[in-house]
Length: 166
Image (cartoon, rainbow, N blue to C red; front, side, top):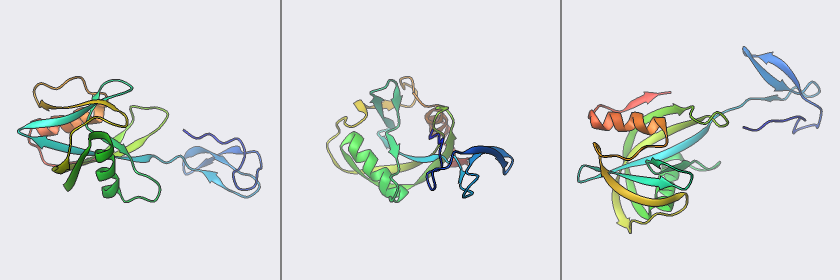
């Protein structure tokens, strides 16, 4: 979470004001307001032979391979890029499966978009933030790091339709 003491536009010390029903940092000189907005994360669900590809993270736990959208990047391109960086695989996206707000990290609220994907090419290998990648049957998954991945897996287990809980 970015915390400002001084206005990034004019350098004046910020004050706190109630704006839009929330306390926000505001510049008394130029009027700039700091709105804390979430970042966007993307993930690709790759199922093969009724097994889900997961990655073991360097910071602990398993997850559906994911990452953040860069500032000037399309969300679908980000999903394809992040998946390739973490797994070594090229995929094509088949559609949005789920959208959820992620509140598990109190320092950084994110909105996640989970796409379904199909493998095109590449060699499966862990890279970037992952130590290991492996396919797991949906009823034999290791502990998942993110609560929203658990929600997506519950949907997959129930063969439920896509969800958009933001």
